[in-house]
Length: 221
Length: 221
Image (cartoon, rainbow over all chains, first blue to last red):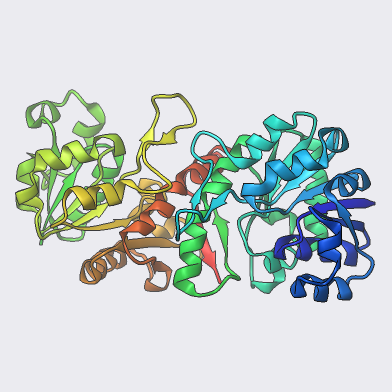
């Protein structure tokens, strides 16, 4: 199956790499294919050298390529990137939204550019009503998203979205990343993304306190 | 030791009852002593019948009584209640802040009346700079606050505040409620309350999904 991943940062590279490793045909979408390909970003160049099967494409081409799409851009850029990808190229497809609307412009700690009565995922869903947005994986560091075994024992990953079948498809991908079904919690419609994004300030504080990014929460019941 | 608990709702009653049970001399603070005492609130009257050692006092008297104070009022009322208690009666004391700034006025789910670049706990700390505010226990249901053994295995309780000694005093109380030291996470100064209060939308969604209030998160690292 073909997947298009928007974003060439650590989250995009990690997700794209894992999807390729487990057999998906992956295109990674970027604003400027020439600039991304020319090796000026050393981290990206090193990663791409290790993942030669992943094609670099502009956002529109990556969107056309993918039967499933992943938003791994920074939260502040997500809506613009999706407009560049093009509503027609997104329509009818599952969009896995991992982005967090972190705003670093006022210094540390970052605030959220949208929260409380809406969320980035809801803004995306509202802007692109024909896309099946599923929010997931935004509550942890990239390495853990694709390898939950980095932490011993049970810990939780959340999904939410308005389309039940889309959530099943995403849960299948999470399973293939190593997530046990019992640890995948479906929180209902896309408005649950408020809670998932508003968890970020606590995550950031846990990271600062524990001085470790490989942390997660387990819902105990 | 004397403790004053502000608030006669389920959180105030649960905390006051536990503190009394483990040997503290507790006054429970209310807006109108006469009204609270006359039995018109059946839940409160039943609870008070079972806890005859706990005196009902107005907020100012409960504040004078307590060497340690607990804010278990609703978030929307907290600042007014503390002003009624009186800055002079609060000064120099530890104030355990359990309140959440939930705003139900716009329907369900509630929003937060303050979040993102501040928190209720910070507003309290700013309004009463001589009080040692420690935020804790706001991330779970009342029954679990005073009996963590209701859930099997490890799960987390958070503390934050600007005064290190105050946090040690609060950790001692948490220990006496049954919280293991390893599960008490000190997240630093009072601004960490943003994360603790902004967790509430996720908690509410977990509650709605799991149809169970006796839930908590364990920080896995």
